[in-house]
Length: 174
Image (cartoon, rainbow, N blue to C red; front, side, top):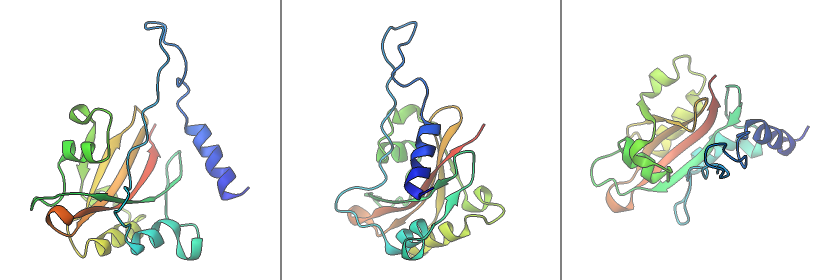
């Protein structure tokens, strides 16, 4: 099975079964929220993150192991950090275009607490290198009951020209 076939299988398996199904109470079809924003035009993804996420010479890269087994994808977003460093939960939700930033279920974790066994050390090291030693945090963003995303990020640069860079992966936690 090719990587593309496997990814298509995972996408279908992880799809919300309620998408497009009429609600008994409203009579309206439910709509799946748009995926969160991971990159934006004009913001370059650091090469160290591309290598960690995609692997050397287009290899396997690093996968987050859960019921979904998803590959990490690079993150590069413009972030006017204004001397504050990393964003708080609501600022992060706005940055990734969460559908409800004020009520988003986001938890900020220390990378050591998030990855106690060192399974994702390659990702944490790549993010640390991309941020040239700046603070690294993990944002746990809940999609719905079982689906969450882990965003391992740092800042690159200062002020208006700064970027939020890192990697994120989907996890199924049932």
